[in-house]
Image: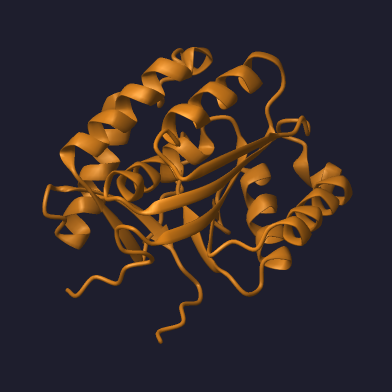
Length: 217
């Protein structure tokens, strides 16, 4: 299958990364970001986490800086909306999302899947589409107990080295999550292997995304 590139080595790619919680962006799209940077794309990243209080905020900050090492530019914004209560905090979350859309005009927005089982994730996805109507939006997936993995239609192949780095950084930066039975390298590597199989990735691994609308020029 012929691959389509968002940017070639040496080109700039302005990426807005949206995650409801600390570790969401890293799990869902961390490999793609690492891969683009490793290939020589000049990634200009704005990294926004909606719920990152206390220690989770510290984890989000240090992890984002590690994943974006080598990027052309990196801006990190952390908020403290209440985990698990995004639907009842809809108005201030929407106001913040609209403010982002006034301040940034990205080429690509990375956000949650619209049908994600987590209510916070669904709201971030919904508001992403409200605020960013003229951008490429790629919705990433988060493995979890709910078993809501779907059928991606866009894939970013990962080298074995990129996947290894993603797994290393997840293990390094998110000590608060180590007690969760789904948060381990086997889970993330297994999903990457399945997505790699689905797109016949050269080095067997990939991240999967959903794109509702793509313009071919």
